[in-house]
Every structure is written in C-alpha cells, then in structure tokens.
Length: 513
Image (cartoon, rainbow, N blue to C red; front, top):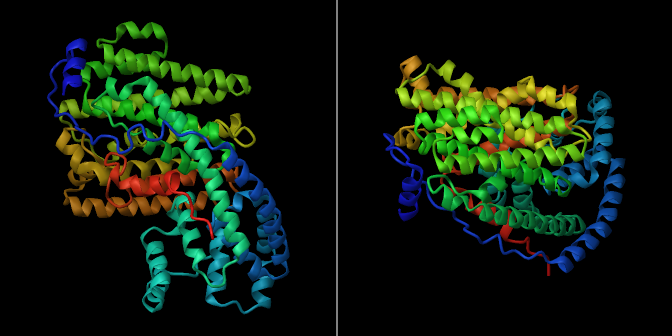
C-alpha cells in the first residue's frame, strides 16, 4: 500500500471510479534469476544425445521395412518430444506413405488402432485424411482399460493431444512410456536426456529474462499490474521449445510482458484521459511524444516500450530484416488502438453488440502481435512475404485471434466485471441475443470449436504459408487452450500454471538407475 500511495502522490494520479484489480502476487519471485548454468552437466547431456541420436536414426530408418511399424516409431518420436531431431526424415517418409496410401489400404486389412494412428500422424503433419475415430470409442476404451491406461485416455479426453502443448505432452508421455512393457529403452533414454538437456537451456533463458525484468524494477514501478515474467516465458516457450529458437523466445517474452503491462494500465489503473494521451504517443512512436504524457509512470512505461522497439529494430537490422521490426511496431499500435476502444466503452458504460465486440477483440487478443514476434528468428521461412501473409489476416490467424479472445473472456469475465472493465464477449452476447450467461458461454464455446476447424483446414496441404510457421501458430492457440481452457484464467491466477512450470523448468526427468 505504501508503494501505491507513493506512486499516486508522485504522478498526480486522479481518483479512479473503477476499483483496483489487486492481482495475486508472483508465485515465483526471484527464484529463477539466480540460476547458474551447469556447463559440465550440459556438455555431458549433449554428448549422450549426439551418440544416441545416431542409434535412434538407424532405428527409424530400419522401421521403414514395415509401414505400421514405421508409423508407430514416428508417432513415438513425436509423443516423446524428440521428432525435431529428425524433421527431414519424417517429412520424406510421410510423403511416401501418403502417396502410397490407396495401395496400402487395398493391400492390408488394417485394424482400427492402425487406421486411427495413420489418421492422426498424417493429419498432424498436414496430410488430408478422412475421420475414423470418435470420442465414444475412447470413452468406451477407458472403461475397459487398466487404471494406468484409463488415466492416459481420460487425460486425452480432457485435453486431446492435438490441443496440448508439445513440451507438456512430451513430459507426461515420457513417464507413461516408461511403464510400457514393450518400451524401447534406447529411445526412452534418448528422450529423457534430451528433455533434461533442453530444460537447462530453458532455465538459462528464464534466468536471463528474470534478471531483465528485475532490472527494470517494474513490479515496484507498476504495483497495479500482474507480475508474471515466468508465466509469460511459459507462453513463449509453448510456441516453440526447440533450442534454435532461443532468441525468438526472448523477443516474444519481452513483447508479451509489455502487452500485459499496457493491458493492465488501460484496464486496471489509468484514467481514460491518460489512456488517450498514451495511445496517441504510441501512434507517434517517438521520444518527443513523451512530453505530452500527463503522469510520470506513463513516461516510464513509454520510454521502456520505445527502448524495446529500438532494440528489436537494431537486432533485425543486423540480420537485414528491418521489415520484421516494422510489423511488430505496427501490430503494437493496432493493439493500443483496440485497447483504447475498450477503455472508452468502459468509461461510457457502453455494452457493444457481440459482433462489434469481436471485431475489436481480434486485435485485443494480441495474437497477431505475438505471432509476429515469434517469426523474428525464423528467417529461413519467415521473410517479407510471410509477414505480409500474417498481416492479411488469413483464416488460421483470424481463428487464432478469435479463440484467444473468447477463451480469455469465458475464463475471466466474472472477475473483469467486478473490476469495472469493459463488457466481455459473454456480456455482449447476453445483451445482443437476450440469453443467460450459461447459454452465452455454450454458444461461444461452439464458435471456439469452429475456430479449431478453420485452423485444421488451413494446416492441410497445400498450405498458404510454410508448415513450420503454421505449426508454431497452432502452438500459440494451444497456449491459450492450456491457459484458459478449464474456464480458469491461469495467467491472472498464476497458481493454476504452477504445476506446469514446475514440470517443465524445475524438475528434471528422473534417469533410469
């Protein structure tokens, strides 16, 4: 309370008609900032990974003699989180299998398990396959299975593999696979060592970002905002966990953190007059605009945001990709404009129609900005044309924006209304269609399901963008599903993500004795 009073006194902050958010504090504090990278341990893991990788590659190639065995092995590599080591080999194999599929189906009388496996693995990699396997089959199987397998099936029903974050799914599946009598011990060891090796890199990144956040001192500067650097990194890591995208994860984390700061400033602290000044300053995007800001805390936030823009511009300029920083900056401007619209609705007590809300909500989801940030290190596939594709709002991006916005609304609408925020999608739907909140949520959930269908369709070959970009876009949608999918805003209430953070960045996978 003392910090809040000090901030208010020094900025001549006007009284607010809306109650302050009083968000829960950080679960993690500075616990990751002190991490010291164990170079010897990492080098040991790396040597073992390189040795085992050759053995696993030989197994992958040897399995080609039998199509079913080969598909099962590819599936194992994906489920255990190590398929990224063999992207080219898997891509070539699946193309051959898909091209030969009519002949294979004619020649072999595959059982339901094999057909469903073919369906999922090929669909997962963008090959068009008709549906064969229903929820009812799985529910029936769960009732007749061993307790261990039944738990695995029920987890899949709660969050299907397709909607789960690859890194979380891999960590869970490693433990499940270890109990399999028919397990491949070499493959299991490879998956465990690789997980622990990559985890060390992730912890190092999280340590660097935690120190960056601590050095900014923004938890003290903006006590009204959510202090969530660890959870933000969880989002960035969910988009792509592979070691080669470390720089991208850094950029994504920093931009999401500033999105969160601006969001909380507009929603939970600033007066509408201050919001207007700040939005105009972002539109101008130059240091001269800082003089027009009426409060010191806004100047601190604006200066730091411009520093982030300049840092990105410098990094991208060195790579000959200045257009990437341009798109990021323009996406942030669009986001600020949309936040201002919401702030005006809240200031006026206006409840827009659901259609009007969704049009603006596509921008406030921040999905476009986060996706643009995730492209920064992907120069081999994310050039100028791909940024233009992203900016054209294709079906998969529009669906991702809508899913992100509406899932967030379902999870957080009650708390947001208590804070006096602008009406969420749930309230807008209730008003436009004169229905209860339960009915509104049911209908919005149907829209989310339809959004997933659009995403799946856009990921089927031939695609309008590189498959790698589409996969990472899908991963961002998965992040939203994990964060908001249980009707719980796990970003605002960080205890909900604690187990996942612990699983991915704190606890190593136990090695076999």
